[in-house]
Image (cartoon, rainbow, N blue to C red; front, side, top):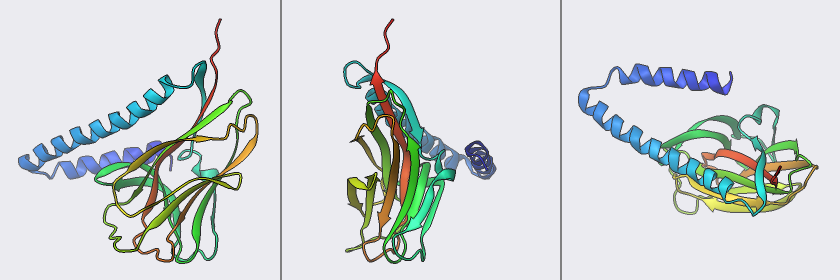
Length: 215
């Protein structure tokens, strides 16, 4: 099933459920949709601002969508794969839904979703835009944390731990690696307790910049 087919199926399912709502619920739904739209526009504006405020003399030349590229990604566990789940689907965190890479870590060790790709030769600057969240409904308390890590060519370039549901959004710099084959790994680790580690990466996108072409 393509992303378009999945989106259409979701929209049709929503239409069927809306038809059963009373007037009060419809008003509440309308307010919530307005809130979601605001969140979406805010997230997109961050990307637009990033593109517009690229380094002087630089322009966005290329991008790689990790959601679209998921079918070619390699899935692995660093130890045992028990209870590991890696897939692409809609995810709701803090009542905000977006397409995401789901990566529930196994009972022992970490989950790895690995992408191999080539950076175009004219790209001399790379940035990655993404969000992380714990899907709504997870009950992570106490010392139960989930680690999120990004590796490029075997080197850890970013990491954090998370326990709350809400999306957290990031824009990070990567090595340029112009014209090279690279390996990017998204890794989650339950740190010894994978219960409720419903970890997701929201709409990860790799952005490649290069010199502005002038006439």
